[in-house]
Image (cartoon, rainbow, N blue to C red; front, side, top):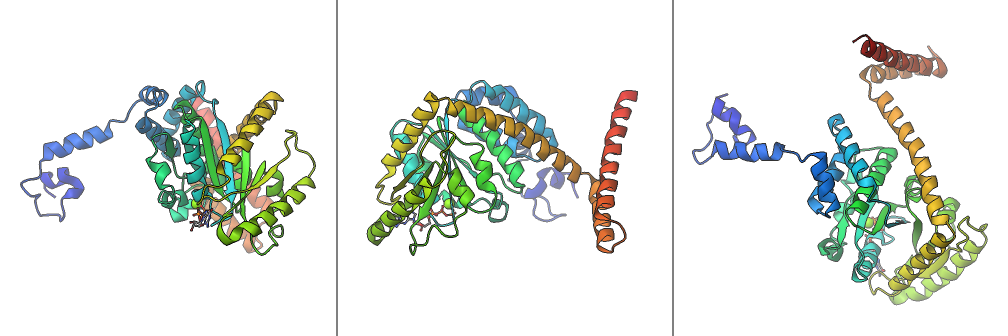
Length: 373
Ligand SMILES: Nc1nc2c(ncn2[C@@H]2O[C@H](COP(=O)(O)OP(=O)(O)OP(=O)(O)O)[C@@H](O)[C@H]2O)c(=O)[nH]1
Ligand SMILES: [Mg+2]
């Protein structure tokens, strides 16, 4: 390949054919160099604290990166933002696919920005590695909010385990808060374990439902109802209003059967329509009442402390696991041992113990190599 072609990189279409004359190699190199110049962590921190969205987006990309070189820098940025974080309220929203979460967040978020709030919308959706982030497609359902300069919408980190996505979302919350966003909304789809992860990173947890054939209480996981600080029956419009009101009565009755919450808060059940906006402002009033009450009785802070303690352990667990499973020797021995267990050549315990031994010995060797240097 000629030198010219090499420099032109992927703009040269076929090897052996030189680039068209109009191609300005030095201009291309200038652009490339500019792209390569990544801002320092200090520049990112300053940008975020000034409310610069580009800095915020770039820092989130660093957090989401799987490149080990970015890890340190991402940590530095989070650390640098920490002192300015925590000054927000964090609201989790869950519900099954199609219940109207995105449409609700659009209406609710607009209501909040009209009240002068700065709203960040994040998502926890580990399945989005397949669908490339449902919230991305959602941007079309959040048309107004996307354009709103007081709102910031970021899709879920993808290609990750739930633990990985959750950790990244927690760090992203810190950056958004440092950038001046005072209301953080975290959407998660109501399947699997992601509600539990989101519940452990928000102050208020809202469950969206729709009214069905009158049997909505069936099939709903008890654990999710117990986590909810409010249940909102969405799509209470048109012919649905009557059914929605009936569902509200049923859910209210069911919620009273649960033991009182540590916060002393009695979960509220309301109806709303994200299309007609009926009931949206009342939901914010309810959430505000909750914050007022829990800030007064100390529960708000207590819960955040507990969540932080929980996340220390979760982060350690997650990173230990990811370190273990990403070692090439472990990957190949794991495959071998799985087969051996399948063929009854070795017990699962012996197989696991051999893998752990390999891992710990590797760690010990790395330590002693470091010491002898
Ligand atoms: N009539 C009515 N339709 C609604 C309302 N809210 C949402 N919808 C409709 O319900 C459908 C699903 O809404 P989404 O907001 O995409 O639901 P979602 O929960 O975000 O769905 P996933 O992202 O797939 O989990 C869309 O066609 C919306 O227009 C409402 O309040 N009333
Ligand atoms: Mg959605």
